[in-house]
Length: 235
Image (tube, rainbow, N blue to C red; front, side):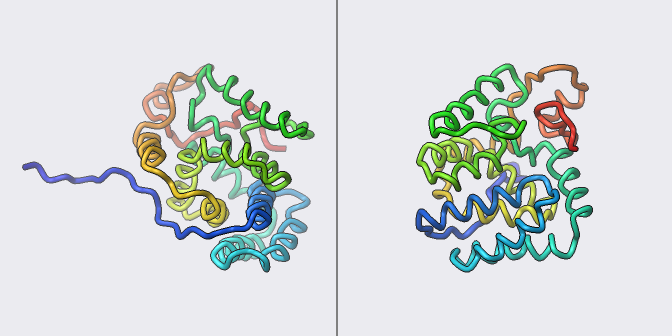
């Protein structure tokens, strides 16, 4: 018998918590604000996050506090540099949920329209030029409404969220604390989701790429370089 030298990828272990509907909305809104690109409102967001922690489950409190401590020590410029290096340069950390489901294929537009449909169904309009599958935007919607449609949307993209969480842990990014806080509030991962997670980690998302890509990008679905999904740059 040939000995196995590697094992199938496994999700990082995570203890989950029971949240009231109000706690769930608070966690999702807190993660939404802190997971967005650092800017002039980041200081106020960190203060608000610290204030909101008192009413959250202890494990979630620890996650949020760990991130806030790092952010407070680092300062806005260092945070922004780390953010760009992490989320804009690493495919496994893409904050656009439909990327994990359909990759940069021709199905991407239809997938994003699905997110927009949920937004409209709940009576909201986007006031910022951002793709509708942007995780902080989806979490903001969850925090504002607590609606099951948004929770189902997160659940349907759970494997992508877990790929992101695993990658952030692997890169030792403080942003991993925020993904831990989020995933503690979501239902346990079932066998089908775990299988999709394993497939994503080993194979990457669908590889039919839109536009011009290098041979390495085609061969390596999770190559390090990651351009913003809407083709824009950070301002």
